[in-house]
Image (cartoon, rainbow, N blue to C red; front, top):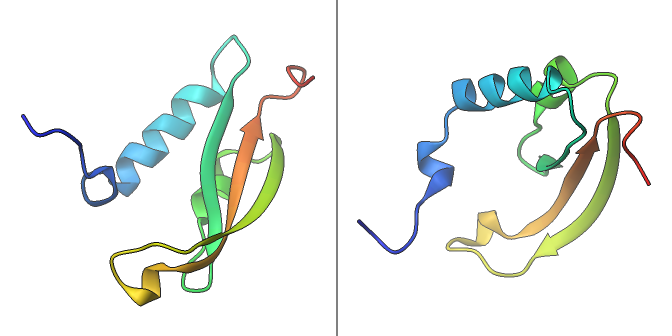
Length: 86
């Protein structure tokens, strides 16, 4: 077993869809941190599977990345179940 996991390469779109389906039906509240978009791509699955949930956006900049194209601005999301916010 290695010291860390490369979830970026091993986590599939189907894994994401299944996670979104499961949390939609949780009887409890939750907070999910995920990404929304960067200059090259957009996470459309959030809008498809988590519509109606509270989405808070946070912009930040990745200064470190294995390649220059992996560095830059990104919009992260904090997704909350309605009725469970403070």
